Length: 237
Image (cartoon, rainbow, N blue to C red; front, side, top):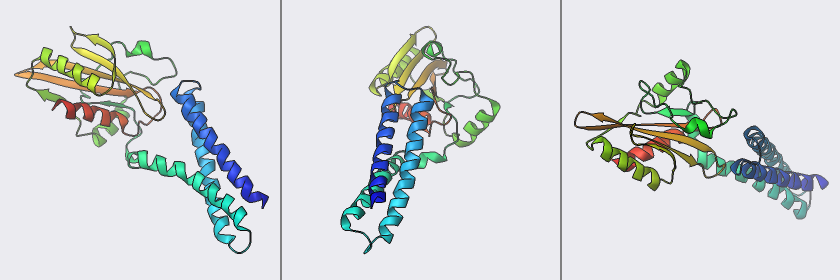
């Protein structure tokens, strides 16, 4: 059956388009909307082909040859593979609110000092979040709070810098007078770049460390910014 081969080659084309989307975004070859939109569309079509292939395989036993049926089995496996990979990476994170600006201190949020110079008009704003976003943030990330440490401000600043480096973040700005550090982290798969700010303030008997992490693209960060902040806090404690 030509139809079985069509399904197989169709899902192969989808697979290639998904790879193009990933590479195009990671290396900034394609605009975000084209790269990620193309990836999402190819993933959807591949899922539909996989479903059709599964149904046709089940209905074709004893009707068509094993050779043609193998094409449908191959189409099903190729179509379902990226779904399994993505579900494993972000499945649980689909429950997070559709926000991309996360902070430990919403009442006294951090203003970025330099990140504006690294972004363009296509990127998300670094302005302080809207009341609606703040409400979602407070509700879902109520566990994110300023980090209170016994180190004096200079010690806390130096240790924060060491932790940033150890986590693999790239420092983009340092202000020793304001005790603020800024960095970026690039995600593994798509190469999304997120901006991070770490601010140290003096407190009675030690210091208070606040963090803010903001995605450059996308409405939802799938929990990545909160996880990043928690990794820093865990590393400091």
